[in-house]
Length: 205
Image (cartoon, rainbow, N blue to C red; front, side):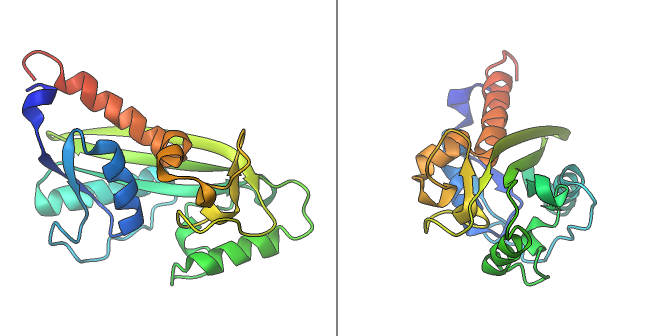
Protein backbone atom coordinates (compact mmCIF):
# COMPACT_ATOMS: atom_id res chain seq x y z
CA UNK A 1 0.00 0.00 0.00
CA UNK A 2 1.25 3.50 -0.81
CA UNK A 3 -0.18 6.93 -0.15
CA UNK A 4 -2.01 7.07 -3.43
CA UNK A 5 -3.63 3.66 -3.01
CA UNK A 6 -4.80 4.52 0.51
CA UNK A 7 -7.56 6.76 -0.79
CA UNK A 8 -10.20 7.59 1.78
CA UNK A 9 -10.05 4.58 4.04
CA UNK A 10 -11.99 5.19 7.26
CA UNK A 11 -10.16 5.85 10.52
CA UNK A 12 -12.11 6.23 13.75
CA UNK A 13 -11.31 9.09 16.10
CA UNK A 14 -12.55 8.03 19.54
CA UNK A 15 -14.34 11.26 20.39
CA UNK A 16 -17.82 12.72 20.55
CA UNK A 17 -16.39 16.27 20.48
CA UNK A 18 -17.31 17.83 17.14
CA UNK A 19 -14.77 20.64 17.56
CA UNK A 20 -11.89 18.21 18.01
CA UNK A 21 -13.13 16.13 15.09
CA UNK A 22 -13.24 19.20 12.86
CA UNK A 23 -9.67 20.17 13.79
CA UNK A 24 -8.36 16.67 13.14
CA UNK A 25 -10.16 16.33 9.81
CA UNK A 26 -8.32 19.41 8.58
CA UNK A 27 -5.06 17.60 9.30
CA UNK A 28 -5.75 14.03 8.23
CA UNK A 29 -8.11 14.39 5.28
CA UNK A 30 -5.30 13.67 2.79
CA UNK A 31 -4.97 10.22 4.31
CA UNK A 32 -8.30 9.11 5.72
CA UNK A 33 -11.97 9.72 6.05
CA UNK A 34 -11.87 10.42 9.79
CA UNK A 35 -15.12 9.77 11.60
CA UNK A 36 -16.08 10.28 15.23
CA UNK A 37 -17.85 7.86 17.52
CA UNK A 38 -21.30 9.16 16.58
CA UNK A 39 -20.77 8.37 12.89
CA UNK A 40 -19.28 5.01 13.85
CA UNK A 41 -22.58 4.17 15.54
CA UNK A 42 -21.12 4.23 19.04
CA UNK A 43 -22.95 6.34 21.59
CA UNK A 44 -21.76 4.96 24.92
CA UNK A 45 -19.63 7.01 27.29
CA UNK A 46 -16.04 5.79 27.58
CA UNK A 47 -14.59 5.89 31.10
CA UNK A 48 -11.68 8.30 31.57
CA UNK A 49 -10.55 7.23 35.01
CA UNK A 50 -6.84 6.69 34.40
CA UNK A 51 -4.43 8.90 36.42
CA UNK A 52 -2.44 10.06 33.37
CA UNK A 53 -3.10 11.44 29.90
CA UNK A 54 -1.24 8.48 28.42
CA UNK A 55 -3.42 6.06 30.37
CA UNK A 56 -6.67 7.67 29.24
CA UNK A 57 -5.61 7.80 25.58
CA UNK A 58 -4.61 4.12 25.68
CA UNK A 59 -7.81 3.07 27.46
CA UNK A 60 -10.09 4.90 25.02
CA UNK A 61 -8.32 3.57 21.93
CA UNK A 62 -8.29 -0.01 23.25
CA UNK A 63 -11.93 0.23 24.33
CA UNK A 64 -13.14 1.25 20.87
CA UNK A 65 -10.80 -1.15 19.07
CA UNK A 66 -12.08 -4.07 21.12
CA UNK A 67 -15.69 -3.03 20.50
CA UNK A 68 -15.56 -2.14 16.81
CA UNK A 69 -12.43 -3.96 15.57
CA UNK A 70 -11.45 -1.01 13.39
CA UNK A 71 -8.31 1.12 13.17
CA UNK A 72 -8.73 3.87 15.74
CA UNK A 73 -6.94 6.62 17.59
CA UNK A 74 -7.81 8.44 20.78
CA UNK A 75 -6.35 11.45 22.48
CA UNK A 76 -6.32 13.01 25.90
CA UNK A 77 -5.33 16.59 26.60
CA UNK A 78 -4.52 18.46 29.76
CA UNK A 79 -3.82 22.04 30.72
CA UNK A 80 -0.90 22.00 33.18
CA UNK A 81 -0.47 25.19 35.21
CA UNK A 82 2.84 25.86 36.98
CA UNK A 83 1.40 27.81 39.90
CA UNK A 84 -1.19 25.08 40.54
CA UNK A 85 1.35 22.23 40.57
CA UNK A 86 0.22 20.93 37.19
CA UNK A 87 -3.53 21.26 37.72
CA UNK A 88 -5.96 20.67 36.17
CA UNK A 89 -3.96 18.15 34.12
CA UNK A 90 -5.76 14.89 33.47
CA UNK A 91 -9.06 16.26 34.83
CA UNK A 92 -9.00 19.40 32.65
CA UNK A 93 -12.35 18.66 30.98
CA UNK A 94 -14.13 18.17 34.31
CA UNK A 95 -12.10 20.52 36.49
CA UNK A 96 -15.20 22.37 37.72
CA UNK A 97 -17.42 19.29 37.86
CA UNK A 98 -18.63 16.24 35.98
CA UNK A 99 -20.78 18.44 33.74
CA UNK A 100 -17.62 19.26 31.72
CA UNK A 101 -18.72 22.86 31.27
CA UNK A 102 -15.91 24.83 29.55
CA UNK A 103 -17.03 28.19 30.93
CA UNK A 104 -17.11 26.85 34.49
CA UNK A 105 -13.63 25.37 34.00
CA UNK A 106 -12.25 28.67 32.77
CA UNK A 107 -13.79 30.62 35.62
CA UNK A 108 -12.36 28.18 38.18
CA UNK A 109 -8.87 28.59 36.73
CA UNK A 110 -9.19 32.38 36.72
CA UNK A 111 -10.41 32.30 40.32
CA UNK A 112 -7.52 30.13 41.48
CA UNK A 113 -5.01 32.34 39.68
CA UNK A 114 -6.48 35.62 40.93
CA UNK A 115 -3.58 37.77 42.09
CA UNK A 116 -0.99 35.15 41.07
CA UNK A 117 1.91 36.57 39.07
CA UNK A 118 3.17 33.28 37.63
CA UNK A 119 0.69 32.45 34.90
CA UNK A 120 2.88 30.03 32.97
CA UNK A 121 1.14 26.93 31.65
CA UNK A 122 1.32 24.32 28.96
CA UNK A 123 -1.13 22.25 26.98
CA UNK A 124 -0.15 18.60 26.47
CA UNK A 125 -1.83 16.10 24.17
CA UNK A 126 -1.15 12.37 23.99
CA UNK A 127 -2.48 10.33 21.07
CA UNK A 128 -2.78 6.56 21.11
CA UNK A 129 -3.16 4.94 17.69
CA UNK A 130 -4.11 1.31 17.14
CA UNK A 131 -3.44 0.54 13.48
CA UNK A 132 -3.26 -2.92 11.95
CA UNK A 133 -3.24 -4.49 15.43
CA UNK A 134 -0.26 -2.42 16.63
CA UNK A 135 -0.26 0.40 19.19
CA UNK A 136 1.65 3.70 18.96
CA UNK A 137 1.89 6.85 21.12
CA UNK A 138 2.47 10.45 20.01
CA UNK A 139 2.80 13.57 22.17
CA UNK A 140 2.54 17.31 21.55
CA UNK A 141 3.29 20.15 23.99
CA UNK A 142 2.83 23.90 23.64
CA UNK A 143 3.87 26.37 26.33
CA UNK A 144 2.27 29.71 27.00
CA UNK A 145 0.67 32.15 29.41
CA UNK A 146 -2.82 32.32 30.89
CA UNK A 147 -4.61 35.65 30.59
CA UNK A 148 -6.70 37.29 33.31
CA UNK A 149 -9.79 37.37 31.08
CA UNK A 150 -11.12 35.67 27.99
CA UNK A 151 -10.19 36.80 24.50
CA UNK A 152 -11.62 35.31 21.30
CA UNK A 153 -14.64 33.24 20.34
CA UNK A 154 -13.14 30.41 18.28
CA UNK A 155 -11.68 27.14 19.54
CA UNK A 156 -12.98 25.41 22.64
CA UNK A 157 -12.04 24.50 26.18
CA UNK A 158 -9.46 26.83 27.70
CA UNK A 159 -8.54 28.38 24.34
CA UNK A 160 -9.88 31.88 25.20
CA UNK A 161 -7.41 32.33 28.08
CA UNK A 162 -4.32 30.59 26.65
CA UNK A 163 -1.77 32.68 24.74
CA UNK A 164 1.00 30.50 23.25
CA UNK A 165 4.58 31.71 23.46
CA UNK A 166 5.60 33.90 20.54
CA UNK A 167 2.06 35.04 19.67
CA UNK A 168 -0.13 37.94 20.71
CA UNK A 169 -3.41 36.12 20.17
CA UNK A 170 -5.04 33.39 22.20
CA UNK A 171 -5.93 30.09 20.57
CA UNK A 172 -9.53 31.34 20.47
CA UNK A 173 -8.48 34.36 18.36
CA UNK A 174 -6.48 32.36 15.80
CA UNK A 175 -7.70 30.92 12.49
CA UNK A 176 -7.86 27.14 12.63
CA UNK A 177 -5.03 26.77 10.10
CA UNK A 178 -2.59 28.60 12.38
CA UNK A 179 -3.76 26.90 15.55
CA UNK A 180 -3.38 23.48 13.91
CA UNK A 181 0.25 24.25 13.12
CA UNK A 182 1.32 25.27 16.61
CA UNK A 183 -1.12 23.72 19.09
CA UNK A 184 -0.48 20.73 21.32
CA UNK A 185 -2.97 18.63 19.37
CA UNK A 186 -1.59 19.94 16.10
CA UNK A 187 1.97 18.98 17.06
CA UNK A 188 0.89 15.51 18.16
CA UNK A 189 -1.10 15.14 14.95
CA UNK A 190 1.92 16.20 12.88
CA UNK A 191 3.83 13.30 14.41
CA UNK A 192 0.91 11.01 13.58
CA UNK A 193 0.85 12.30 10.00
CA UNK A 194 4.60 11.77 9.65
CA UNK A 195 4.14 8.23 10.94
CA UNK A 196 1.51 7.47 8.30
CA UNK A 197 3.55 9.14 5.54
CA UNK A 198 6.63 7.07 6.40
CA UNK A 199 4.84 3.78 7.04
CA UNK A 200 2.45 3.82 4.12
CA UNK A 201 5.17 4.79 1.66
CA UNK A 202 7.30 1.76 2.51
CA UNK A 203 7.46 -0.94 -0.19
CA UNK A 204 5.28 -3.91 0.63
CA UNK A 205 3.16 -2.12 3.25
